[in-house]
Length: 77
Image 1 (tube, rainbow, N blue to C red):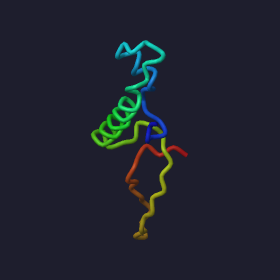
Image 2 (tube, helix red, strand yellow):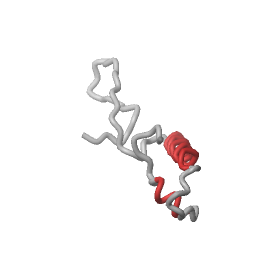
Image 3 (cartoon, rainbow, N blue to C red):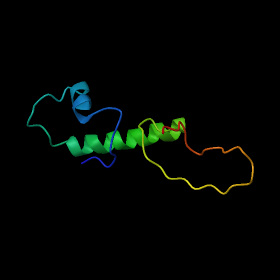
């Protein structure tokens, strides 16, 4: 089972790309799911942004200015 809620590519899409077409051949699905999770994290770390929308809660100490620099972007409200 996938650790992440969402990945940019589904397990079915990855199976099709790798030509794993037999319906009963699910023995490697957990390996593929882990690979999808790891690749998603690696891509997001490299880019410095989330490629899948996620909910975050960040806390900032204010310094009295009118500017706030977010740690994560883009911000989707």
